[in-house]
Length: 463
Image (cartoon, rainbow, N blue to C red; front, side, top):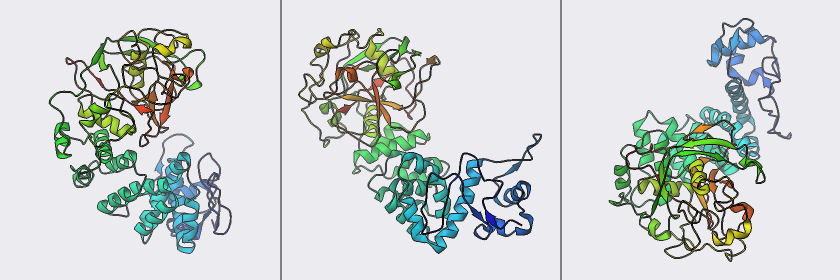
């Protein structure tokens, strides 16, 4: 009869966790959880059937948990999602530990800081919170120990009413649009709960909050009429676009990335084919952005690029102006202006000073837009001055040819391109790319807006 220890059905493998009794060191990088029959109610209920065999264990788990299913394949009587099964088993173990050593749970959570660790443990802690006798108190303790883990667990737990979940989320100092998006995904079929999210974007709300709400609802296809959203938020879309100078870019195929030199994240070079678009000749200026948010503060005067704004806020302005942020493929295509060289004007960094503000000539400050020479297609400040937000998540390139490249999934930050006033010539090349957390801002990061030609359909609101 199975009494404890790592059960043969789950020991080993490449996914799992270790949990040691309170008072012993806890290693979040461990490879399996030690299961004990007394700690797992759904196993203990059928103790006589749970022998030290894979078949007995899986039969009980399949019957009691709903995670397993019969499989018709030869030699495979059962199939299950390893991660989901182990998360459920681990949550059962943590529930038992919570009763005996609640402080050990939050102490362990405090060790989970990296995105990878939080991602591996979020669902397990969500199940723990749902089973806890006082889920709100536990969530608050988790947020105090590891805010990112607590927010992830909060968005996935079933143990709290929607208004409480939302209130706890926005009370944290570092919540962002991704936290709100998780809730929107979860509540997609629950209009009353989605209305709670929408209600955050009231006329007196901070622009950053409005931007996060717009993003979350757009991504799940629940934004509704976009002009009506902006009216309800007290920021009606303008009758005329606030951006006056546009450059029309013909569709075409180009080689994206850097084959020699540069950085590893610029490779492999791949062919990308794009349809026609229009993009702002200049980065969005402080004066233009002030029409949406008059109180926004950042260095420089009205003709300086607007900076010190998150990816969410840049994205919101682009939609408010009737466009969107460019993909990094569209941005690089416009920057290169038809060449495959290091810069839009050639390969010689000695000529960069005629085209860009960078570390040798800027005095480490952002300058007014349009003071340097444009690239061959008429775009200004594509090299240096300020980085520019793009719509994409920062992700590795693939080598396969692509058409109208859609932003790939990822969670390493949102892409920005072009380099800043304090960067070296190498970091102002056409292929340079970097990633930044979407909720962060910098005095060296701005953006420009892209729109499709009038004859084309408008882009989906999710971008």
